Length: 109
Image (cartoon, rainbow, N blue to C red; front, top):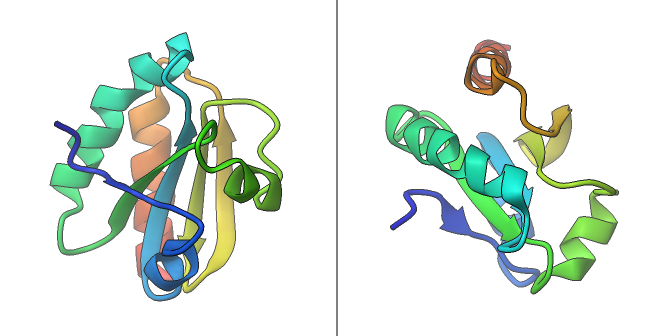
């Protein structure tokens, strides 16, 4: 079970409007997305109470992916008070470190 909450078109704006949020744009059929899933779950546990960690299934929530201009998955976008502040595309060996550094920077700014 994922620690990251799923977002939909009906709750996306309200959930990302305040504070720092990491949103993982993914799909069930995406191999790299499955590789990233445990990292996202770890971040959700580590940042509980500090930042929000969410997931958007691009197959069921296509409009959210279009609105965020997501062209490849996985895409990870960090929002602060509803505005995009950082974006990462794909899975790299240092993905967790990159996401942690970006979350920490957004939290401290």
